[in-house]
Amino acid sequence: MTNQTIDVPVLIVGGGPVGLALAIDLGWRGIECLVLEQGDGSVDHPRLGIILTRTMELCRRWGIVDKIYNCGFNNDYKLNVVYATSMTGYLLGRDENLSCNDMPAPTQSPEKRQRCPQIWFNPILEKAALQFPSVHVMHHNKLDSFHNFKDHIEAFATDTKSAEKRHIRAQFMVACDGAASSVRASLGIEMQGNPALSYSVNIFIRSPQLLRLHDKGEAERYIFVGTQGTWANLTVVDGRELWRITIIGSEKMMDLNELDATALVRECLGTDQIPFELLSVKPWRRTELIASKFSSGRVFLAGDAAHTMSPTGGHGMNTGVSDVANLGWKFHALLQGWGGPGLLDAYEKERKPVAQAVAAASAKNFRAWVSAKSCEDILDNTPAGEATRERIGHHMTEVGREDWDSLGLQLGVRYDESPICVHDGSVAPALTVIDYQQTSRPGARAPHAWLAPGNSTLDLFGKSYVLMQFDNEAFTGNIEHLAKLRGVPLKREVIHDHGIASVYERRLVLVRPDGVVAWRGDALPPDCTELLDTVTGH
Image (cartoon, rainbow, N blue to C red; front, side, top):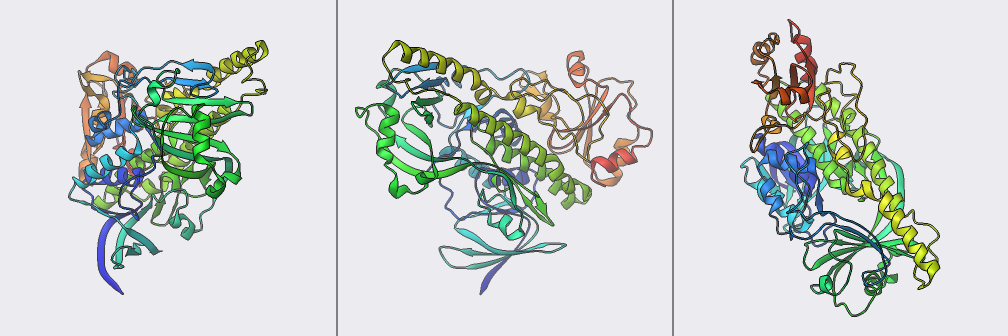
């Protein structure tokens, strides 16, 4: 028997980082939403640890970026990448990187990447979400079923502690329920791609003495190459005593009854003289899968429910956060009445190509990891063994760069085929993983430039369209009057700075609420009806 009926504009299924990021974005916009989460909100096995630059930019928008920088990670810990045969074995190569404290923000962004393990990141997001009175989070609540009607969603859930049944009516539902999404399965949406790049096991350990009992120095990640090739890595979690080990193996490893996790940890350490505590062990498959559709009716897929990818590069969760940043303002537009159906129709056209590009790059990173060949004598204390170690070390440091340095991929992905951007026929700059060239081309992230110390152009965007005007003589048409008549939030920003004008490339640039360029030119058309129709989804 259903004991409770809840009416809410947006229902979010899954209270992980992606679902909570959507709740924050909606709460920040004043939209009521409900998050259903089967667990209690805690994380006992951190899978993610790196918050990339674009996600940090969004956290800046939401007012929580300082909480991420000060999450508790040891920010003086150097984020090198080390290639070795084990923690106490032969050193093969080293990629030197600065600590979080010493790392500057890139010139193209007001923010830099930050290590923040999921054990801290999730609670930060949930606390931030619940500061908005329009956000509700229900732990221990499992979605049982739903009906995807033409004009609304009917969902049914159970409180797994009290057994209370809940009936939920929503305008929209977003599946943020992970790679094994029950919502996606109910919709009959298939995943396409490679279902098994590899089989792996994550081992989460505590070892307070590890840092002083090996000679490889501080590193964000230690990658181990043995006679069989690359077989494991050890990743820093808190910069002090918590570590995550990933073992790359076969499908047989999925059976934990056949796995000696303690022995594997000792093999990574290369000694039994370093004490450690085994905290948790989780088998998983490394995949490259994209949903055939990102939506069905009023239900949308985001994060791992829509795309799964190798964690090499740390793009999975970060791509999911950008998914929901794409959705939040569109829900707001439709719920306020000024947005047209084309806004949500554009979601898949915008986000699916991005997911495909990032998943392919992540798979390429993984293949680079395991590309070491002819390693049979890598452990031999002989001239031949030394030659092999030098060759493998050089190879790994060369092919591994895109895993650690990916600003081009983080900020440079564009919505080149978006039906709600007015494309101008200009030549698109090349999309590369490492190098990022800012552009005001429609479909691209609007460029960052400093308006004043601590004040970025990115701080102008979020809750309205922004018409950036770099020349007082540029004709602005009737777009402000037309937007006001329609209730479309739009503001004009006149900027007298030749440096910023050169970055924005045109005298007028129209930026969407999500910070993506919708249109640019040197003058608006005399009648802006068609332009406003396009960018608002009509």
